[in-house]
Length: 599
Image 1 (cartoon, rainbow, N blue to C red):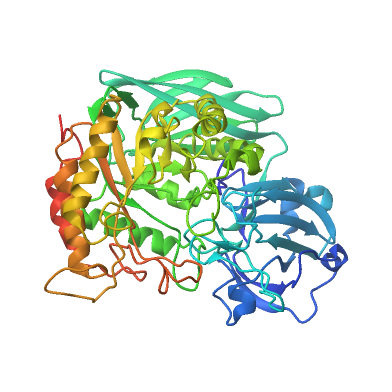
Image 2: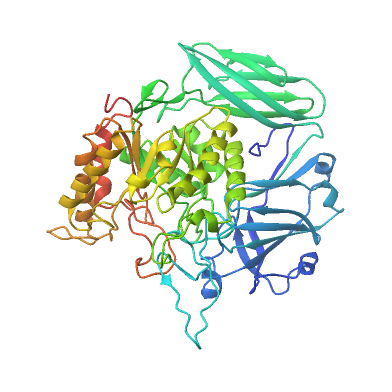
């Protein structure tokens, strides 16, 4: 799916702004109301999560459907073209109506979907209604608890005479922000148009060969013109598939991006796709970018900010990458869902390396307070498999041409040890599917939860071992000597596999401004000593190829006794002020080279 762009052949209208809005207090709604303007609507901003835009529990903890609505009055000159309505993301699922007629549905809150709307439009004003369902359960990704309660709240007791309010119980540790969270756009193309472009670079010496495939609708010639950043034509090609060479190629490098522009023309249509030429490979215990051993320095992140919730924010994206460069980071993981395309395009331009992750978080019914009782076989209970396959296909389809993406993560902290054979049966086909879907065949991983690691049969199947580890916080909290001993025992175990290993999460909750001469948990000093203790051990292992801290910034979570105003493991506060640990990492990461750190 191509990102919508304005050019001489294509029109583009951004529907961002203030829409009409109504909460639907219940698990369903009458579709007839989509044919008329909403009665007594409220205002809501798009794109953004709705939860924090208005005050009150009815917004913050809303359960079920909400309705967005606006008028759609398109310029007459567009009506001769193919008209497409496109949503960057609607969380968690959506039904879309024009003039009361349902035109599409979509499940999944973090990937785009679109629909041609010519046949649904009438002359003059049209009424666009989007119904959004925020419910999560054992069939959604991310997963919601169906027992009542979750890892933060504990199980909800069933007491006579007590009726808890209906609400979502996320089986994950971040707030279930929902709504139309990414841009809504209308774009147009000619009737014969370019549907998709696939680019596969290989490098030999100073030159590169680019295999390409152009998917079109209609009949006609396809012409490709390749320009460098100065606008000079460096290659040309014709046909819907083939290859072209770029001599003396400028490689896309971490923190030193270079992007070629590939202009594709077909009949009256045209589209320009950017291309960063780089190679990615796992060889033995090393992760290679452009043939050199790369060391990941960076973060797990969240799309999370005050007021907007998980709403796309270009200003925040630019600021976050600026802070990454300031601190010496070169990478992040899109924990725990694919991020907005705008962020991915920005990372391509800025040279930020990305591990791209599906929204498969909470696929674990034996973790935290909500588990209770005897262990359950998660994969005999969960109903996510088909949807999981869909999001892998769609994520890779969306991001396949992005140079910044060097690895796919198909899940975070799944249950891989309670019933290890069931986990393999579930994840091995998904691992294979990710490889099949990716034209560039990038490495594939799953991020492992803190568990009885010796029982894990799933992580060893992956191309890179990615671990979330909290020795010194959730395990041996406050005892950093014991934490170091336990960490060394585990790293000795994984070293025998002969594969590269990195941390995709490690950290300690830290209240900004809380200090102590003798470091104790939750102080800024303890956060620094925690990281010093971890690095004392990890720096000894040549197969340890990266450190992504949890988290870039403090973020919102569901209410619960384990969280005070959210998760406080950020190196920056939620409003992006550095804690003491930020200055520690700034010194450390600027001393560690991006390449060859442990060669």
